Length: 409
Figure 1 (cartoon, rainbow, N blue to C red):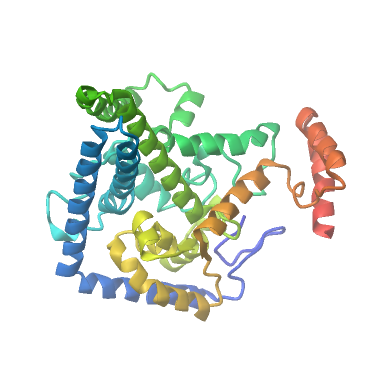
Figure 2 (spheres, rainbow, N blue to C red):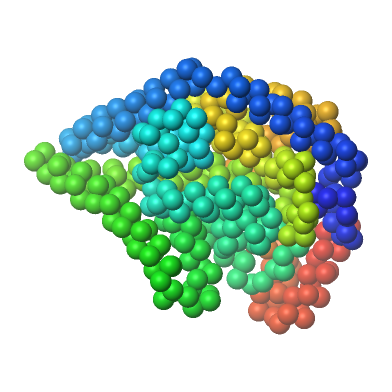
């Protein structure tokens, strides 16, 4: 793990060792200036953008659901399912996520406001805003504070002690991706910690859990009861049911991939809790810069990602209108270059590969993947078996051996 303060520790890297405290605070000043420039220039064009997008998303969804009323006809199923998938992605990513960040509150439109918006998602907007806006964006990539980092089910850093159950990490990550909206709802409830502490009977938790179940019931009724029932006259009940399920899975896999690319690829820094003690505004900015990664690509990719392809810019300025991130990205990248920091950006496929490579790498003992090849695979698998079935002392000794060999390689 890394520290963003000028207090390096043995065994830790410090990617800002070349910066002075004055440099770090000046970075904050320059980023504040970029933010203020956008705030001062918000206006009619921005408002027209979000209103037009919401209108188009709703038309795509309604049109797709209308086509799916005849989904017993295969071409209608394909067109309707694709359209519904796109509509759900737009609703979650570029519209819902960004409205709930308060990016459009300045318009003072009660219909497009973070306090009133609800989205096509299992997690109630109010609960998501707390876990995401208040917790994740405050403690970005701080291990033990930011549960978005691995969602509490994954090993996310080499400094975390490896244990045999981490071998299942790629499986858990994939299952979470497939049913991502429900994973987010459980995460927003802090379900794992509540169960671990045996606090499931706590009145506050029960009230919040009831809200989640109510939201899930509404979503399920719409997608798996009402819409398919409307398709009965055309003999399309089951195809429409399958189309809604497929669209939800597509949305889940896409949104999970985009979010995974934002904070988990190789090269993104994670941070210790002690690294944010006494953190200044400049240091907070630098942590966002080091703890985020972008996806390079087309305007269509940026739109479908909710502009989280500009994850660096989003984490620096989460309350700025998302349609302005592409505009300020060159200025932000220039600031990275000026202060010799790495602006981590890759195309979608390499970024997804990088994130999943890290998921797999950290599911294994430190150094195992790096020291394994076709010739020594049987021997390495034997070491892995001993570590998975042995006691802590065995894991510690074999782990040290692997790390030593990895450093030598």
